[in-house]
Image (cartoon, rainbow, N blue to C red; front, side, top):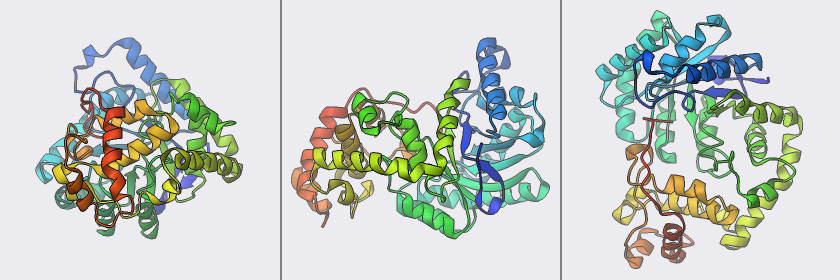
Amino acid sequence: MIYRRFGKTELKMPLVTCGGMRFQHKWEDVEWGEVPPEGQKNLEECIAYALENGVNHFETARGYGSSEMQLSRAFAHFPREDMMIQTKVSPEGGAKKFEETFEKSMAYLKLDYVDLLGVHGINNRDLLEEAKECIEIAEKWREQGRVRHIGFSTHAGTEEIHDAIETGLFDYINIHWYFVNDFNWSCIEAAMDRDMGVFIISPNDKGGKLYEPSEKLRALCDPLDPMHFNDLYCWARPEIHTLSMGVARPEDFDAHIKALEDLDQAKELVAPIEARLRAEVDAVCGENWDATWTRGIPEWWNMPQSINVREIIRLWTYSKSLDIVEWGKMRYNLLGNAGHWFPGEKAGDFDDSEIIAAMGDYRYADRVPEILRDADAMLRGEDVKRQSKGD
């Protein structure tokens, strides 16, 4: 394993982190007796295998159902000082609820302290205001030794993430950034300015369902596997300290541990593949599209019917050019169904002139109605409900 300094926390963070939302029994709390022995055995084997390979950071959340309870049984087999444990609690509902939920987390985890406590899902400015109240309580827990470092996770828009970073209240951030989502790089730079730890959420699943890549994506990433490419694409930037791997079985770690062998030559290996991918995006979506489509694109709250144009164009761009349509469907059909975790609406009936006017001086404004209809035809399926209360 290779480790990086996790910002001002001074923790040595492994480049591969064990995410705890893919191997639990259920997405809601259950009695211990309901957990199948074979499922618990698998989870405990994941933890043991992680530690054998130097993956000593484990991340879960109160919103991950039975994860905390099941992990506590696994953690009991290993010295506490050998592990860094992070859980996350939503600020939604205010400070009193935050405190009650944290106490429930600690009871399930059976721990005296957590190394990292994340304020979970600061996804808009209202939640940021609630989070500020919750931080006062979290700081008391820090003084008591129950919490060592305080951070936040977010699915917010770029402007809102900057707002949260600029409060100066947090030691680290859980954030989305990978090849198919470049929007938040300025946020990572802002986090670096404040010496925050940077933890990348779900680079394999939200980053393109890379465990089930299309044949086209495989060919474009050759000689690397798409997950291998995406790992190196992220790790090549020293601003990124760890990638969260939501494993379902022990061997799910193997591809990422193998990718570490190429870290020293990450830039050289990534460059030709990245060039091919970006060229294909331009070939399919339009000349110079890859370098320019994100510039000046409005947020969903400025659009008619709250259509999340920015997100839909992102999904269209990579689904269409890289043939990762199942990933696009998974994300697109959350729109309108996932609240502040994935805000805005799908592209239904709309007036072209209203959409174009709302795009302002966006250079591709005239193309947007056509793209929205194409995206809707390609990606619309049954509405998807989020299973967890945060990821």
